[in-house]
Image (cartoon, rainbow, N blue to C red; front, side, top):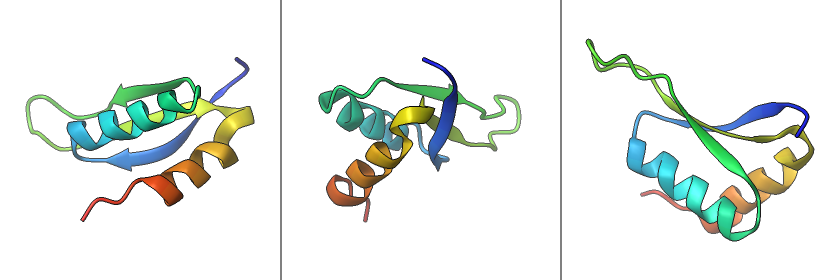
Length: 68
């Protein structure tokens, strides 16, 4: 893999893991970066994929994941 790109950001750990899981079911490797501050409880969880798969990952998120 060349470079990782952020494709999704959320304050919720479980939403980041859902996005990661859906992408992995489509054989897209995805990683979660925890950028949440443990002392003050602010920040985000970021889902990253390889730069070559950004458009595919964004399309999957748009078509298959709805958080409401």
